[in-house]
Image: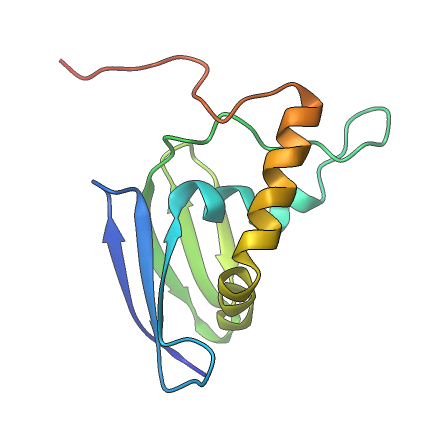
Length: 125
């Protein structure tokens, strides 16, 4: 399974990932928010009490570019200055486990008392 193409849709805030022939998936759309909160760098963050921190306030985050990182995968760069490397296998996992992972995130977010919404709403004039 190889990724054949990415399509960044900033208007709809999603990334289309097209895979070569695969019995499970050929194409998928993943929201920028889902990709941002799913990066491996987020899973390691713990607060002082040792609890895993929930990444919040990323509903309006934008994916600004994708860079190939040789055999490691692709670096996704977001407008909040966060970047993370996603392997082809991890992107496939995120696709296949979307419903479970998204619901787990929403539950953890609710339990933490945080929100998906941006803390400050910026408008370009």
